[in-house]
Each structure stands twice: as C-alpha cells, then as structure tokens.
Length: 481
Ligand SMILES: [Zn+2]
Image 1 (cartoon, rainbow, N blue to C red):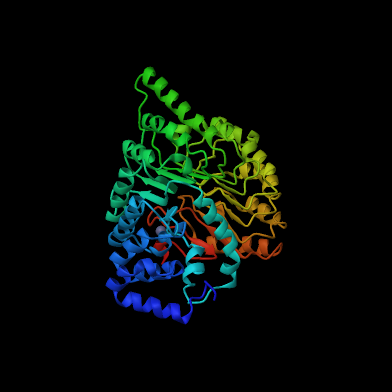
Image 2: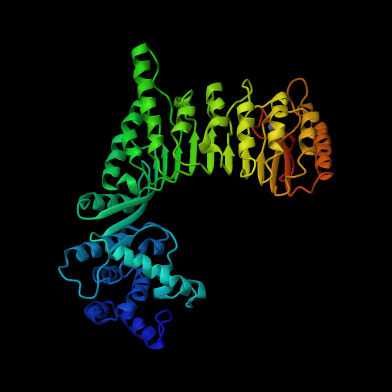
C-alpha cells in the first residue's frame, strides 16, 4: 500500500471522520498518523476549527507547512492553528513524534503533494522523486529542540487582524519559540516598531528585506546595527529614504555625515548579498563608492533609480569588483546629462559577457554620451532587454547604434527614444515626422537582424502626461486620440 495515494479504505475513513467532527475529535488518537495530512487539509478547507486545533496539537510530522494552504489571511483558521501549537508546546510526552517546524509562508510546499495527494488527487512522479530530499530536510528539522516558526512578513500601517494576532502571539512566546522571518517588507512604519519586530524575528534569518520608509539619516543610523545583523541577506531594497534633515549649522551636517558613514559601513556585513535595489537614496550622494567598496560578494543585479548621482559616485562604477558580474543593471531616472560617462563605459565593458538587461531610461543622455558608450553597448552580446527611453538622441546617432547591434541576437525587448528630430521648436511632437522617422529606424534595424519586440517612445506629453509610442504597443498620446 502506497502512502502517496490513500487507499479507498483510507478515503472512506477520512470521509466518515469529516462528516462528524465530534467523532473525529474523540478518536483522533487512534487515527493512523499517515492520515493526518489529508485529514488536516480537509479540515482546513472546511474550516473545522476544533478539529484543526486538535490535529495540530497531536501533529506527529516534523513539519506543518500550513501557509501553503492559506491563500489569504484568515483570523479564525490562524487562531485554530496557533491554539493547536500552544497545546503541542504544553504536552509533556509526544509518543508518536513531535512537530519541529510550523511554516506559515504562503509558498507551494511538496509536503501536501506527497502526504495528502496532489490537487488533482493523484501524485506526480516529480513529487515522488522529491520525497528523499523532503525526508532529509525533515530529519534536519527534527534535530532542533525548539519549535521553529517560519513566516514572511509585510508590515504596513494598516495591518490585517490575522497578522496583528500572529505578531502578538509571537511576541508573547519569543523566548520559547525559534521565530524566523525569511522575507520582510516594511512600509512606512516607525523605526521603534521595526526594531521591536526584529527583536522577535531575529534579523540573521532574513534573506529578503525591503525598507520603504521616510526615515531621516538619524533613524537610519539607529536602525543600522540591526540591518548589519542580516548576514544572510540575499536581496535588499531601500526606498525611498528622504534626506529630510537640513544642514542648518555645520554641527548638524557633521552629525549627519557620521550617521551616513555608519549606515554605509553596514554593507560590509552582508555575506551573500546578490541583489541590491535603491530608489531615491539621495542621502548616499557622494557615498555610493563607499557602498560598493563595502560589498563582500559580487552582485547579480544592481538597481539605483531616481537618484542624483555625482561624478565621484559614477567614477567608482568602473573600479568596483563587486559589480563585475552583473546580469541586471538599472539606472532609471538617474540624470547623467552633465557627467562624464566613461566610468559607465568601463563597467559595461567589464560586464559585457554577463549583462542580460540594461535600463537607462530617463538618464537624459546626449548624442556625445551615447557615442562614448557605443563601443561598450555593442559588446554586450548576452543582452535580452534594453531600455533607453527618455534620452536625447538624434536620428544619425540612433541609426549608428542600431546598425552596430548585429550581435544582439538574444535580444527580446528593445526600447529606444524617438529621435530629437520628431519635436518642433516648441518641443511638441510632430506626429507625421514621428511615424516616418521611427519607421526609418525600424527598417534600419531590420536590415541587420529581426527584432522580437521593438518600440520607440517620445518624452511624456506636457498636456496629458503620456508618451507617443511607435512599434510594439504603439499608440499616440491622449491628445492625438
Ligand atoms: Zn498628450
């Protein structure tokens, strides 16, 4: 008899138990433990709270990945699970085995496919093959003494009641449980609150962290030691952090600089950071090179957007080892108009063999700058996506660029700015010229290679706030429709 496909007899037992909750409760001790996952799954779907609580209390598998069953947060079912956990914790003996990990993350978990049958009632060969790995993981969990609770948290000012209940529950049990948050997102919460949460969910377990706040540099400096404890961070997003402390006197300025330096030094604590995104981090102007120098691991993706970059920041691009294996580079809204872009060219040359996506939208680059970058652009043979919208290029330089892209044969999506010749002296788009010139550019490229998705866009219209797009997703701005 296979454990993956409950026999007809087992199915009949399950049905009988689910029909009568009181009966199920009274004979739970006698139910074979292999039936527990299927029984729990059904009790969960039918919101049989008493039965759920009793099953959790008597759970004999090392892991209970209940988050995989929770499509949306529900206070009552969560309460039933947590009550069951409390009962597990107070039980003196666990003759049939004991729960080691409660996983509340809303992610697919092979456990249910294996032990409770797949969604379609069958069990795929894939999940059967997965079983040895799962068993190994479960054994590893079993070695821990304390019950581990794993969750992902998105903290916002308006919390749902299920999350509020869970946080309070966790806080009250922080000394007796091993609480782990893998993915944490913070939206506009006060620094004290976040510090309090990270006192419950220890920062070292966090692998993905998003900080969307309006903290000033003094708050950031207060938070820095805690951020520095996130040694296992793989993905970090900081946005948008306003530098809203004014340098009234030199003394304030000095204090502020000290705080920024303190914050920057934290980047040397991350042992496995791969993805770094920063939006509007104006307080880091002139400190970006220090950030890059602090990085301990090569980044796979770097995104710095809507940021006023200084020349000294940009200079560091070509000499920071941690950037030389980038697959994704985004510099959207970083105005480069008056800067020397040679360091960017230096970086692009270094990543020519790895770079897959490049976003320089809204960098306000000029012809001379594109000319300088061109040799490095065309060497990036792995590119699948490029976005150069909202740069100021003329027809000849755009043609020149397109004609030299013969080795971009992996390209899927390419987005270019409409040439400057599309605008009249008042800066308005001449629709006929726009269509004619973009078609000409398209023909130029098609003579070289077959583009998959190609488009040209104008700047956004002063009146309606929309651009005109030619090619893939083509449309005129609202004024012309
Ligand atoms: Zn318009």
